Image 1 (tube, rainbow, N blue to C red):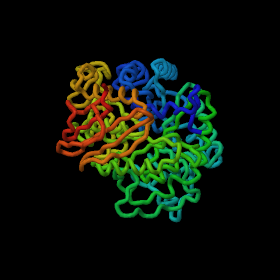
Image 2 (cartoon, rainbow, N blue to C red):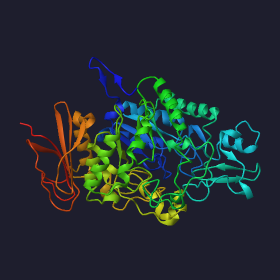
Image 3 (cartoon, rainbow, N blue to C red):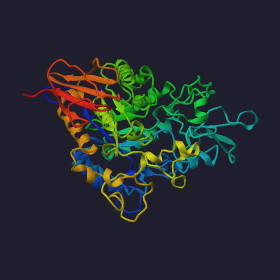
Image 4 (tube, one colour):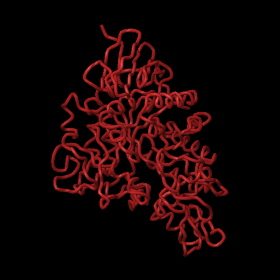
Length: 536
């Protein structure tokens, strides 16, 4: 089901295989109306930057009507734009502008839960007899009035909230104000599929599916067993959540049927081909690979987050890449992620001296990469004072706040940095050194992170080896990750020196540097090279 046919050449890859996806967090990209919060009109006005940069698709985090307790992931109306971000007309103008620039537009699809302010939940909560009661997961208390089972919320406390009026608990894996939908009810599935159709009809090119595996829980709602020592569900600690092995509160096998049906919905949409990219927090390669579907009929791209918890070490990264390449089903396509709105920025994780190395890794591995806004500038995490924190994860521990990686995009020096009007306080602080990091300052500097990223994207786009070729590791000295990419007669070699000493990697043939993180063809400490066969 994966392949599309075009012209005389027979089978060709669908657009999303060779694409580079760029994630925009709408609150933080560009503020057109001067209220300190980004919006759709601001994004539309800045899309030329993405076309100039050389990415292919934009993933837009939620912009739907919401009370914003989790900044748009708590949706109160799936078919409208929150006034903070604009109107449906603004969305239509945004997608038209993106397509005019040759950019695909992917939007977030949030299937597991709604806001407690959603009309569906207000009806469901109104009485046990309401037709929408079974649209959410309600249960009687256990003996003594306790919650129905031992499930916990990711953000602390039981995953059950008590409703005194109807004397039952509702399930919420996330915030109490984000009740879980009951996907075992056919009416819920039909309604949520209609949500997808609404945005497909407006021209979106696909969906990034939020916490995709949580839509199917154990139908018996059995207790989760204790976690094995030191075994985390995610790539970072989540307090009480980590005390359980989460075998019953998500990823029930019934999820496969749901996502097969969703894939069929996408396949039935008119051309061009639409993509499904799923948030799947699975770190075992074999288990991860199952979510492509037995017949490659589920997710096009189950997100691969394995590099987020990888040590910044050549052996560890090579092992991860080999493992996921080996587990990949025949005909499936890999993908790689180094950052997003939930994760510390890569420049802060590996250090500013290695952010180019990380970008070189991300854009030359086999598969579809996702690039987080501002990473092309080397933006770091931004310290946020406690009084200005917004993220509900800070309820567990302020150290877990995701606000630092969501700071506003830096377009220009001075004033509101081109993000908002001068004198307006942005919803989160700007990065220190914002003037020097800005697009305007970096754009004409051939040695900047922005220029490096653009050169790397251009090299990738021009090389069949990099866009859809094969991958194989090469022998290299300790501390160096080396690999070869090739397709037909096109070939590239990538050398990444993750060590603190200069390295030399002997290679057969005659090679020259196409893109270098440093200033020359040497492989200095924490430097990398993209090599091509010498021309002439």
